[in-house]
Length: 267
Image (cartoon, rainbow, N blue to C red):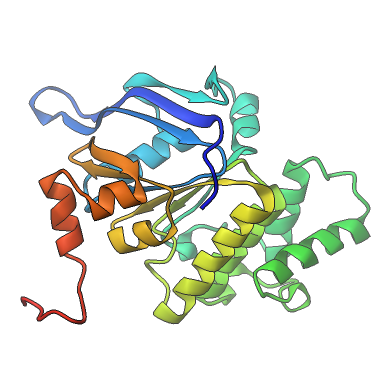
């Protein structure tokens, strides 16, 4: 784990409500946080706890009902398409379902070229673009020469997740938001994907925000852990503090739900 640095992304009293009147649902309820530069942060909770809604707010995909988000110490401004695209250069995402994460009409080389153009490489010679795409694919153990003219849906789930990481390699954002990035791929591919994310973090100094229900995974990879229940952060701190010395019953329940091979399972 690396030392904490300056605050990169923070939130004050972030709230998201859906519906009105007696049908109103508070998905995220006045949460506060400071995510530091270069950290791995896990937001852990059960399905329906509000963690994915919070992720969408951080990405600017849905509006906040109340509260403010600050990026690099400044109030986030995504009021226009141009400002939103500029923000997205600094924050990218890997989603749970790789099969719905790509435009089915775009070939793989087009997907990667878009990343190069987004980072200001539109005027690069084509040979330079090929070199960059080949490097990005090599980073995730894919061969670019075998992907040219193919569509993402022609790849396996694990290959699609690696292609998403190749996009991140090209974009080099300051923040990567990974929403259950290993939950829909086979067990043999999970460790590989996590190792690639950690290597990318070391290589470009990226902050990773991991959205997960797996508290064991959170302990394994994280500097800081936030436990989310019913839209609120009920416990937060370093991975050791939260998971080895939990204070809240909900955190303890999440820990106890992790199967242990040396204990009899209560089925």
